[in-house]
Image 1 (spheres, one colour):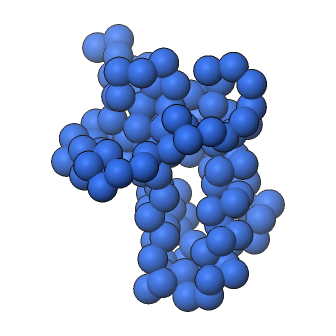
Image 2: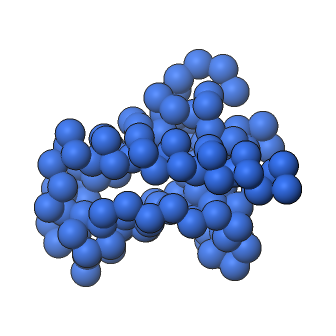
Length: 123
């Protein structure tokens, strides 16, 4: 995948895509207020799906801001991420994170995901 855009092919679009990741999650990466589930996708690029509920992030403004920050973070790191489908879940406390903390958190999560995916592929 070349460039740094965020086209449709980088997104999980159907309920079946999400269900597959939930059922076959080979990798789990936890962060403060966030959790990422991932499984290999057989493509040459990562895909992202977001699950951000009203229960965990009350205001629509905060949910939309969280989505934008996550998409931007993935867009910038997509070239170094392995070919996996990722579902990012917002947990309690996700709305208390400011943007700078959220960016640092996501950067660390993507790095751990890369490392764990490398380990699972080599073993």
